[in-house]
Image (cartoon, rainbow, N blue to C red; front, side, top):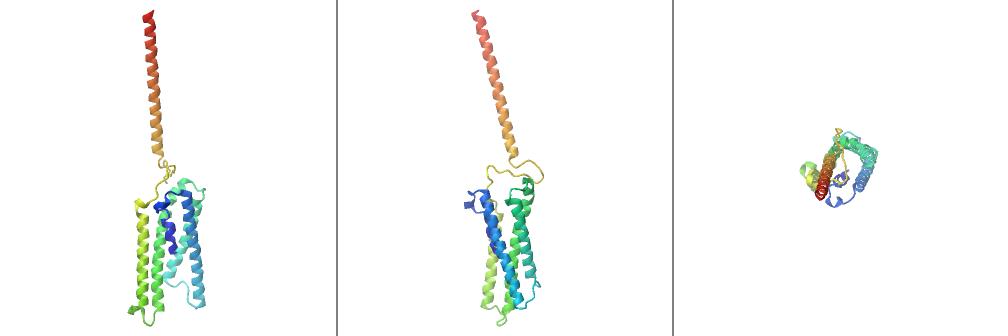
Length: 227
């Protein structure tokens, strides 16, 4: 499930900001779907391998955390599909669930990183018997280095996601409702501009009316003087 980093940073890549939001949503959902399918295939392969070798299933912390990550990932995928991709959910519901959706994605990704690190350590403890893992053989050094690279990779993804300058700019015509039922974001500014335009038009009408009155008074005065 390390393929989850692609959907996470797809909105954070500057060269994708010129693409439409609907296209990026579709790419985000497609990458998540591919990662979910690969996760299911991996689970089936693991259970088949354990059953063929007569190895007990679901006894270690690695297996518990890994299965929890897969279940949460499926729920996250279904929530994103029905709430954010399909145009059925109201904007207020999307605004309410968006922070939860973002936090859950990062939480699941961090859980996957922890599952990978626990899995490689568990595999080394059981697989390396002669020489033992405690003697730090070349296989152990290689796997420990791999684990550190996975940790650095996860930290890099978290850094990209949490940087405000990497956030996708808002589209000019996008409107986002506040979860508390307040006015849409940007609506107050639009209303202020509209009221400003109304005040400006009223002042222009008043000035035109005053100018007409002055012209009418001058015409009357001119006619009286000629009489």
